[in-house]
Length: 181
Image 1 (cartoon, rainbow, N blue to C red):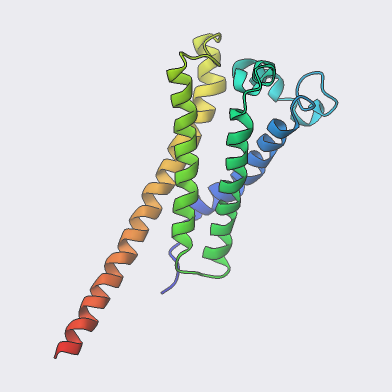
Image 2: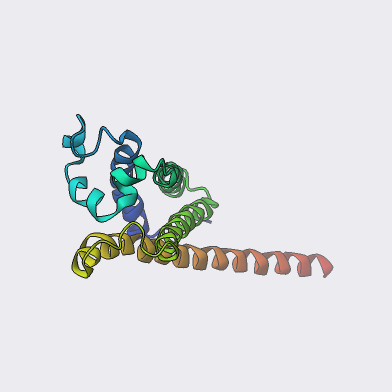
């Protein structure tokens, strides 16, 4: 049986990989990637973001807060899994490829929800200084994509996995009943 694929999932995994690796580079290269750093030119748009989300800013470095780089390390793992899904589904046509994509998207969804929950439970300690408009434009909408799209991927691949399991179960029942006859 061939692997069921969805163009939108493949595109999401492929298009987000360079964005995630760019973000990981910013995080791992701080403070050199930050305003005033010799590599800041590579991450110029973070000039705004490091002021919007203090997890990405100087305060996190001064506080020796490891959350930013810890989540970046998980970004590397989940992105490699995303790219593995694309290879396994489209090149090698491995039947378990949807499980890899499901696990990767679950990681992204869970990590992003954790990121938001951390901000909620600390009383908006990293974003509370922003106006609602800045928060909406620079934090809620961009980060919201990392909940909505991975959530949709989890839903779709979960449905595909359940469908494949149902077919396998019917096949197994049919094979078992034919042996009894």
